[in-house]
Image (cartoon, rainbow, N blue to C red; front, side, top):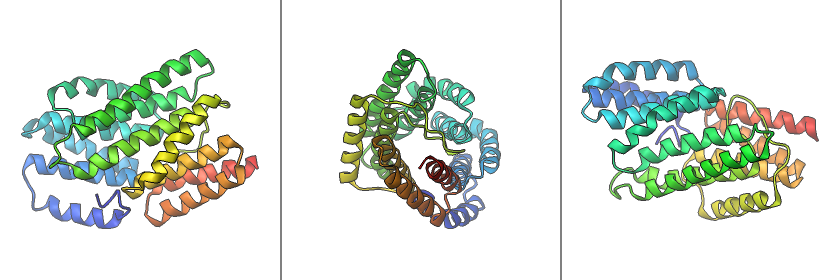
Length: 275
Protein backbone atom coordinates (compact mmCIF):
# COMPACT_ATOMS: atom_id res chain seq x y z
CA UNK A 1 0.00 0.00 0.00
CA UNK A 2 2.68 2.53 1.02
CA UNK A 3 4.84 1.75 -1.99
CA UNK A 4 1.91 1.97 -4.42
CA UNK A 5 1.11 5.38 -2.94
CA UNK A 6 4.64 6.59 -3.65
CA UNK A 7 5.86 6.41 -0.05
CA UNK A 8 8.82 4.23 -0.97
CA UNK A 9 11.21 5.35 1.78
CA UNK A 10 8.56 5.03 4.50
CA UNK A 11 7.62 1.59 3.20
CA UNK A 12 11.27 0.51 3.43
CA UNK A 13 11.50 1.64 7.07
CA UNK A 14 8.25 -0.05 8.11
CA UNK A 15 9.26 -3.35 6.52
CA UNK A 16 12.69 -3.29 8.16
CA UNK A 17 11.07 -2.83 11.57
CA UNK A 18 8.52 -5.59 11.04
CA UNK A 19 11.14 -8.07 9.80
CA UNK A 20 12.73 -8.01 13.24
CA UNK A 21 9.47 -8.64 15.10
CA UNK A 22 7.41 -10.90 12.80
CA UNK A 23 9.61 -13.99 12.76
CA UNK A 24 7.25 -16.75 11.56
CA UNK A 25 7.94 -18.02 8.00
CA UNK A 26 4.68 -16.69 6.51
CA UNK A 27 5.36 -13.18 7.82
CA UNK A 28 8.99 -13.27 6.71
CA UNK A 29 7.90 -14.26 3.21
CA UNK A 30 5.11 -11.67 3.03
CA UNK A 31 7.42 -8.89 4.22
CA UNK A 32 10.17 -9.81 1.77
CA UNK A 33 7.61 -9.85 -1.01
CA UNK A 34 6.54 -6.37 0.04
CA UNK A 35 10.17 -5.25 0.13
CA UNK A 36 10.84 -6.70 -3.32
CA UNK A 37 7.84 -4.85 -4.77
CA UNK A 38 9.12 -1.67 -3.16
CA UNK A 39 12.52 -2.27 -4.76
CA UNK A 40 10.87 -2.83 -8.15
CA UNK A 41 9.09 0.51 -7.81
CA UNK A 42 12.43 2.14 -6.95
CA UNK A 43 14.02 0.58 -10.01
CA UNK A 44 16.47 -1.50 -7.92
CA UNK A 45 16.03 -4.84 -9.68
CA UNK A 46 19.18 -6.34 -8.16
CA UNK A 47 17.76 -5.80 -4.69
CA UNK A 48 14.37 -7.17 -5.74
CA UNK A 49 16.00 -10.34 -7.07
CA UNK A 50 18.04 -10.76 -3.88
CA UNK A 51 14.92 -10.51 -1.73
CA UNK A 52 13.10 -13.02 -3.91
CA UNK A 53 16.02 -15.45 -3.52
CA UNK A 54 15.63 -15.08 0.25
CA UNK A 55 11.92 -15.82 -0.06
CA UNK A 56 12.68 -19.17 -1.69
CA UNK A 57 14.47 -20.35 1.45
CA UNK A 58 11.38 -19.75 3.60
CA UNK A 59 8.71 -21.14 1.26
CA UNK A 60 8.82 -24.84 2.30
CA UNK A 61 8.11 -23.88 5.92
CA UNK A 62 5.13 -21.62 5.24
CA UNK A 63 1.52 -22.49 6.02
CA UNK A 64 0.17 -20.97 2.82
CA UNK A 65 2.87 -22.12 0.42
CA UNK A 66 0.77 -22.12 -2.77
CA UNK A 67 -0.34 -18.51 -2.28
CA UNK A 68 3.20 -17.41 -1.48
CA UNK A 69 4.61 -19.21 -4.52
CA UNK A 70 2.07 -17.53 -6.78
CA UNK A 71 3.13 -14.16 -5.44
CA UNK A 72 6.80 -15.11 -5.86
CA UNK A 73 6.21 -15.92 -9.52
CA UNK A 74 4.19 -12.73 -9.90
CA UNK A 75 6.98 -10.51 -8.62
CA UNK A 76 9.82 -12.44 -10.23
CA UNK A 77 8.10 -12.07 -13.60
CA UNK A 78 7.48 -8.37 -12.88
CA UNK A 79 11.23 -7.90 -12.59
CA UNK A 80 11.74 -9.64 -15.93
CA UNK A 81 9.09 -7.40 -17.51
CA UNK A 82 10.82 -4.30 -16.21
CA UNK A 83 14.19 -5.59 -17.43
CA UNK A 84 12.78 -6.34 -20.88
CA UNK A 85 13.54 -10.06 -20.52
CA UNK A 86 10.28 -11.28 -22.03
CA UNK A 87 11.28 -14.84 -22.89
CA UNK A 88 12.31 -15.62 -19.32
CA UNK A 89 9.32 -13.74 -17.98
CA UNK A 90 6.78 -15.73 -19.97
CA UNK A 91 8.49 -18.98 -18.85
CA UNK A 92 8.05 -17.93 -15.22
CA UNK A 93 4.40 -17.07 -15.77
CA UNK A 94 3.65 -20.37 -17.51
CA UNK A 95 5.36 -22.23 -14.67
CA UNK A 96 3.06 -20.49 -12.19
CA UNK A 97 -0.25 -21.03 -13.97
CA UNK A 98 -0.84 -24.63 -12.67
CA UNK A 99 -0.64 -23.21 -9.13
CA UNK A 100 -3.74 -21.14 -9.79
CA UNK A 101 -5.83 -24.32 -9.64
CA UNK A 102 -4.71 -24.87 -6.04
CA UNK A 103 -6.21 -21.65 -4.68
CA UNK A 104 -9.56 -19.90 -4.95
CA UNK A 105 -9.85 -17.28 -7.72
CA UNK A 106 -9.09 -13.84 -6.36
CA UNK A 107 -6.72 -10.92 -6.63
CA UNK A 108 -3.50 -12.95 -6.46
CA UNK A 109 -4.56 -15.27 -9.28
CA UNK A 110 -5.72 -12.18 -11.18
CA UNK A 111 -2.27 -10.59 -10.95
CA UNK A 112 -0.71 -13.67 -12.57
CA UNK A 113 -3.16 -13.46 -15.46
CA UNK A 114 -2.36 -9.76 -15.84
CA UNK A 115 1.35 -10.58 -15.86
CA UNK A 116 0.94 -13.04 -18.71
CA UNK A 117 -1.20 -10.53 -20.60
CA UNK A 118 1.47 -7.84 -20.10
CA UNK A 119 4.12 -10.09 -21.62
CA UNK A 120 1.84 -10.93 -24.53
CA UNK A 121 1.20 -7.20 -24.98
CA UNK A 122 4.95 -6.62 -25.18
CA UNK A 123 5.52 -9.51 -27.58
CA UNK A 124 2.55 -8.54 -29.77
CA UNK A 125 4.01 -5.06 -30.19
CA UNK A 126 7.13 -6.64 -31.74
CA UNK A 127 5.32 -8.62 -34.42
CA UNK A 128 5.61 -7.77 -38.10
CA UNK A 129 3.08 -10.43 -39.08
CA UNK A 130 -0.40 -9.04 -38.43
CA UNK A 131 -1.93 -12.52 -38.03
CA UNK A 132 0.58 -13.39 -35.32
CA UNK A 133 -0.05 -10.09 -33.61
CA UNK A 134 -3.82 -10.60 -33.71
CA UNK A 135 -3.48 -14.07 -32.20
CA UNK A 136 -1.37 -12.72 -29.33
CA UNK A 137 -3.76 -9.81 -28.82
CA UNK A 138 -6.75 -12.13 -28.58
CA UNK A 139 -4.99 -14.24 -25.94
CA UNK A 140 -3.91 -11.19 -23.95
CA UNK A 141 -7.38 -9.66 -24.16
CA UNK A 142 -8.85 -12.87 -22.73
CA UNK A 143 -6.33 -12.86 -19.86
CA UNK A 144 -7.11 -9.24 -18.98
CA UNK A 145 -10.84 -10.00 -18.92
CA UNK A 146 -10.35 -13.15 -16.82
CA UNK A 147 -8.20 -11.18 -14.38
CA UNK A 148 -11.07 -8.77 -13.79
CA UNK A 149 -13.40 -11.73 -13.18
CA UNK A 150 -10.95 -13.27 -10.70
CA UNK A 151 -10.73 -10.01 -8.76
CA UNK A 152 -14.52 -9.87 -8.57
CA UNK A 153 -14.44 -13.31 -6.90
CA UNK A 154 -12.19 -12.09 -4.08
CA UNK A 155 -13.67 -12.23 -0.58
CA UNK A 156 -15.08 -8.71 0.02
CA UNK A 157 -13.39 -8.71 3.43
CA UNK A 158 -9.96 -9.47 1.92
CA UNK A 159 -7.57 -7.40 -0.19
CA UNK A 160 -10.05 -4.57 -0.69
CA UNK A 161 -7.39 -2.28 -2.12
CA UNK A 162 -6.38 -4.90 -4.69
CA UNK A 163 -10.03 -5.41 -5.66
CA UNK A 164 -9.99 -1.80 -6.82
CA UNK A 165 -6.53 -1.88 -8.39
CA UNK A 166 -6.70 -5.13 -10.37
CA UNK A 167 -9.52 -4.13 -12.76
CA UNK A 168 -7.89 -0.75 -13.36
CA UNK A 169 -4.49 -2.26 -14.13
CA UNK A 170 -6.13 -4.81 -16.44
CA UNK A 171 -7.96 -2.06 -18.32
CA UNK A 172 -4.78 -0.01 -18.67
CA UNK A 173 -3.17 -3.12 -20.11
CA UNK A 174 -6.04 -3.45 -22.58
CA UNK A 175 -5.54 0.14 -23.71
CA UNK A 176 -1.83 -0.46 -24.30
CA UNK A 177 -2.66 -3.68 -26.13
CA UNK A 178 -5.04 -1.90 -28.52
CA UNK A 179 -2.53 0.92 -29.02
CA UNK A 180 0.22 -1.54 -29.94
CA UNK A 181 2.51 -0.03 -27.31
CA UNK A 182 4.86 -1.62 -24.83
CA UNK A 183 4.81 -1.24 -21.09
CA UNK A 184 8.31 -2.30 -20.00
CA UNK A 185 10.16 0.30 -17.96
CA UNK A 186 13.73 -0.35 -19.12
CA UNK A 187 13.45 2.18 -21.94
CA UNK A 188 10.91 3.52 -24.38
CA UNK A 189 9.99 1.32 -27.31
CA UNK A 190 6.83 2.30 -29.09
CA UNK A 191 6.06 -1.07 -30.67
CA UNK A 192 4.18 -1.58 -33.94
CA UNK A 193 4.11 1.36 -36.34
CA UNK A 194 0.43 1.16 -37.25
CA UNK A 195 -2.79 0.32 -35.44
CA UNK A 196 -6.24 -0.14 -36.94
CA UNK A 197 -8.98 2.44 -36.52
CA UNK A 198 -11.01 -0.17 -34.63
CA UNK A 199 -8.19 -0.77 -32.14
CA UNK A 200 -7.71 2.97 -31.74
CA UNK A 201 -11.43 3.37 -31.02
CA UNK A 202 -11.28 0.58 -28.42
CA UNK A 203 -8.29 2.23 -26.74
CA UNK A 204 -10.08 5.60 -26.64
CA UNK A 205 -13.15 3.98 -25.09
CA UNK A 206 -11.12 2.19 -22.40
CA UNK A 207 -9.10 5.29 -21.52
CA UNK A 208 -12.24 7.44 -21.47
CA UNK A 209 -13.92 5.04 -19.05
CA UNK A 210 -10.81 4.95 -16.83
CA UNK A 211 -10.74 8.75 -16.78
CA UNK A 212 -14.23 8.72 -15.30
CA UNK A 213 -13.38 6.14 -12.62
CA UNK A 214 -10.50 8.00 -10.99
CA UNK A 215 -7.19 6.62 -9.71
CA UNK A 216 -6.72 4.27 -6.76
CA UNK A 217 -2.92 4.38 -6.36
CA UNK A 218 0.06 6.34 -7.63
CA UNK A 219 1.65 3.43 -9.53
CA UNK A 220 -1.63 2.95 -11.39
CA UNK A 221 -1.88 6.68 -11.97
CA UNK A 222 1.55 6.69 -13.61
CA UNK A 223 0.61 3.83 -15.93
CA UNK A 224 -2.60 5.62 -16.85
CA UNK A 225 -0.68 8.80 -17.64
CA UNK A 226 1.55 6.82 -19.98
CA UNK A 227 -1.45 5.16 -21.63
CA UNK A 228 -2.85 8.64 -22.35
CA UNK A 229 0.56 9.65 -23.70
CA UNK A 230 0.51 6.77 -26.17
CA UNK A 231 -3.07 7.51 -27.18
CA UNK A 232 -2.20 11.09 -28.09
CA UNK A 233 0.85 9.84 -29.98
CA UNK A 234 -1.33 7.51 -32.03
CA UNK A 235 -3.81 10.33 -32.66
CA UNK A 236 -1.00 12.51 -33.99
CA UNK A 237 -1.17 14.99 -31.09
CA UNK A 238 2.59 14.86 -30.59
CA UNK A 239 3.03 17.98 -28.46
CA UNK A 240 0.26 16.87 -26.11
CA UNK A 241 1.87 13.43 -25.92
CA UNK A 242 5.20 15.05 -25.04
CA UNK A 243 3.60 17.22 -22.36
CA UNK A 244 1.91 14.18 -20.80
CA UNK A 245 5.13 12.17 -20.86
CA UNK A 246 7.01 14.99 -19.12
CA UNK A 247 4.23 15.23 -16.55
CA UNK A 248 4.46 11.47 -15.97
CA UNK A 249 8.23 11.68 -15.56
CA UNK A 250 7.90 14.47 -12.97
CA UNK A 251 5.20 12.51 -11.16
CA UNK A 252 7.34 9.35 -11.02
CA UNK A 253 10.38 11.29 -9.84
CA UNK A 254 8.38 13.03 -7.10
CA UNK A 255 7.19 9.69 -5.72
CA UNK A 256 10.55 7.88 -5.99
CA UNK A 257 9.39 5.52 -8.74
CA UNK A 258 12.86 5.21 -10.23
CA UNK A 259 12.05 2.66 -12.92
CA UNK A 260 8.94 4.55 -14.01
CA UNK A 261 10.86 7.83 -14.14
CA UNK A 262 13.43 6.22 -16.46
CA UNK A 263 10.66 4.84 -18.67
CA UNK A 264 8.89 8.20 -18.92
CA UNK A 265 12.23 9.93 -19.49
CA UNK A 266 12.92 7.64 -22.44
CA UNK A 267 9.49 8.48 -23.82
CA UNK A 268 10.18 12.21 -23.46
CA UNK A 269 13.47 11.86 -25.30
CA UNK A 270 11.88 9.86 -28.11
CA UNK A 271 9.05 12.35 -28.57
CA UNK A 272 11.39 15.34 -28.49
CA UNK A 273 13.41 13.80 -31.31
CA UNK A 274 10.26 12.78 -33.18
CA UNK A 275 8.71 16.24 -33.06
